[in-house]
Length: 279
Image (cartoon, rainbow, N blue to C red; front, side, top):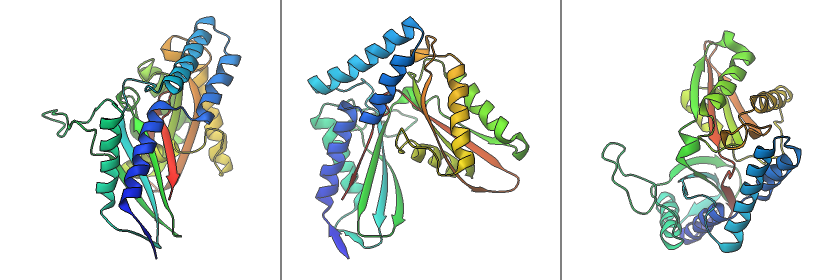
């Protein structure tokens, strides 16, 4: 059994939160740069140039890429041979608290969704756990701004709706969202399971590398088809028309009931702020 000090978790969460807010991931930036080179609309190309410049300024001047520094989602994969010497939830939330106060990130969490009183430290984080083999602890974080999160959706389709129904749901949702989630977007899609399982899978799909494809041939084909259909809408960067509405589509799936076809769509903005660390 390998012991991990909870302070290491706190410090790792702190660094992940700060880095995610200030430094865009290379795979995400490269997708935006590629999109700029291929964009045929002059206004859309200019917007993509401004996004790239914004990301460079954030890195060079150590300032957040966006004023909405998000609610923190943490995905924990804990090995069966790992022992943490304190409460993991507390260690994670202390890292979030430290990051959002010391790094002057905007605090966007309210304690109660009805009375809307700010917690003043951006806690608590939304935490998910998965037990895996081994003696490692993997922490994956995502900063979820409200602009994109508010445009995310779930729908319980009929099995007879099939693949065409899934495509229509995603494309219609993106068109309805327009510029509000700050496109170009990264789309995480969960198909199958139950309503809650589909939603979780759609979030987990966003943690995949921007350049990968599903290991399932049919799902990989569907990712490409949805990517092409979404970009064909011409919603464009920031909703002002153009070739680039979507940077990537990632689909996770799970078995489901014979009478159900749950589909969840988590929309992520162009910054797509996420980091991970393995302890």
